[in-house]
Amino acid sequence: MNNRAFGEIKKHLGFGMMRLPMKDDKIDNEQTCAMVDRFIERGFNYFDTAHGYHNGMSEVAVRECLTSRHDRSEYLLTDKLTDEYFKSEEDIRPLIDSQLEACGVEYFDFLLMHAQSARNYDFYKKCRAYETAFALKAEGKVRHVGISFHDKAEVLDRILNDYPEVEIVQIQFNYFDYESVSVESRKVYEVCRKHGKPVLVMEPVRGGNLVNLPDAAQKVFDELKAETGSSCSNAGYALRFAAGFDGIEVVLSGMSDMDQMEDNLDTFSCCDGDFAPLDEKEQEAVRKVSDVFGSMGAIPCTGCRYCVEENHCPMEINIPSFFSGYNGKVVFGKVNPWETLEVIVKRGSGKPSDCIECGMCEAVCPQHLEIRELLKKVAEKFE
Image (cartoon, rainbow, N blue to C red):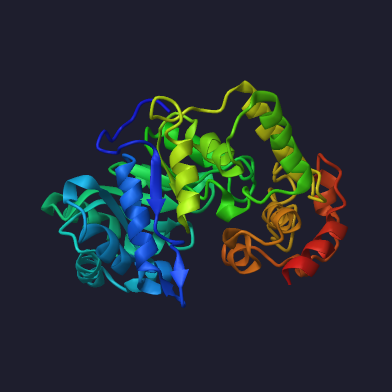
């Protein structure tokens, strides 16, 4: 991880305060305080929250467990502007003021336009959200303006062309989604590099799915550790994969207990107190684990998109995205929130069951997939 853009960020692990420890359906402040203290004690300082996390209580936990107990110089705090909580340009400033108050700070180190995608980007533009954020930066209520992003690479390219003032981009990035046709981790990362934007990583362990692995995948890492004597955890391999690319400023982890935190802290403090990227043997093991995922009944779609481009699907079904969501279901037992039927349809797709079995998609598929039959399997999972 070279070419650090923000020297104020200490080390490369961020504390994502979206999966905090719970007790009696409430955030466990005692345990959260202990985790915050340990995080700072070990030399880390980047914290991330949003207005809707934990049903609006994450920002309060930030105040009660972090900002009221530690000096402002000991931490960096990121918050987000979420479209669910404003309807017009006039709503934005009062919303940000309320978030600052909830967090107990006078300024945010980073303010991100939340979950940007083709679905909501035009709304942010209509409300002049970006312009308002840049004005807040000029006034000192925000130090840096960025975005968190959930869509295709071409959408990110459009946003960064429209707003070159954006300073940093948060993306979903992990070895499972690296070549995903729905998430497009690699392509989105490459757009960030093209525009020279530092990167924040979210979902490096895919919501915990890269921790509890299928037996065949676990065997790969077990054999590696037996050969090398490594004590790296499954989460550690995933975190180090995500962190090992140029331009990565912070890898966020939503830690829910002290054991998870200690493992993550150790992962990023293993060599002279700093991070060590995956070596060649570890990279090969990660590739093998990815291959295991691909062999678990997943559809071998390469995401070439021949089936949906040039009017090959008269029903406008986003076949590659549904296949990607189906693969997540059969491998992990659940669908990524950004690959659900509702989200894909909102992006302008027909449903899998809308297929009229014309066969136009199969006529152009380089993998010779029986797409019509596969869409029936996808419909069973999704609908």
